[in-house]
Image 1 (cartoon, rainbow, N blue to C red):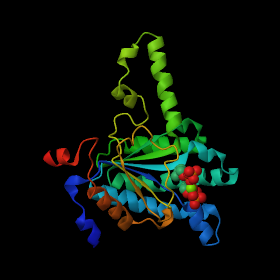
Image 2 (cartoon, rainbow, N blue to C red):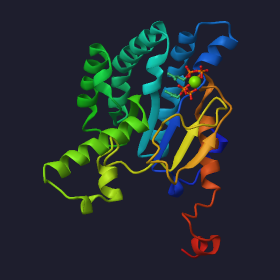
Image 3 (cartoon, protein in one colour):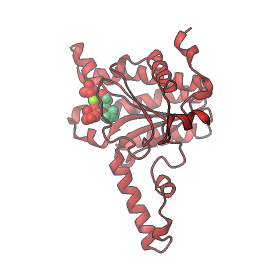
Image 4 (spheres, protein in one colour):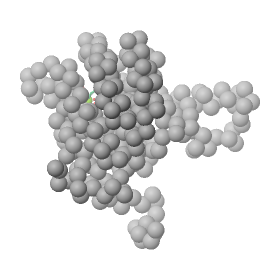
Length: 249
Ligand code: IPE
Ligand code: IPE
Ligand code: MG
């Protein structure tokens, strides 16, 4: 039984955790293996993270699995990642069902190979009625792409007379993003010691707490997640107010 897990205050859990799963390539390299071995080994970390978030009672978990910019990697690596995605979805759907977890995606999934699209569509459909937690995979995702799409969509509604510019509010913009209907992430974790956002959820993380872990993604385990949540719970979230104001509430 984990000590850290019991230190977590279940009343103060982040509703939505987002993770930039980074460091697979370096992990493999340190072992003298090919990068793809790092990606394959990262699946275990995904399982651990999904399981612990569901156990704790986190409502949304978003995992950055493939960015728009990742299309610039060598074709061999891209193909291997796509195959890994297909085989992982196929083998894990059962676990998602058993654990009452719903699968969703954000990103330009239309650009994924047909096999991936089909596998994803099937898993999303099968798990659509699950209610314990929503697992969101960011695939072919970048925040600038998402915001650009939202702007196009809103502009076309104005052009057609469906709405006018007065109707553009923060809420309307949020509702035109891929994450419409989801609460904003309260905790953003990035592994591998890199301190950057890499085009992930720029609008949605406006007030997220950031947590950077030096652990390479394939080594990320439940204890690391608990550490991140405990760090989140020790912080004072002021939202522009003073410390005194926040303490009064
Ligand atoms: C993260 O690990 C996985 C993806 C981006 C698909 P990397 O592949 O970026 O690993 P490093 O950063 O090169 O170590
Ligand atoms: C970000 O990781 C994207 C994912 C984790 C899927 P990268 O490894 O691609 O990010 P940069 O390019 O080093 O910033
Ligand atoms: Mg990386």
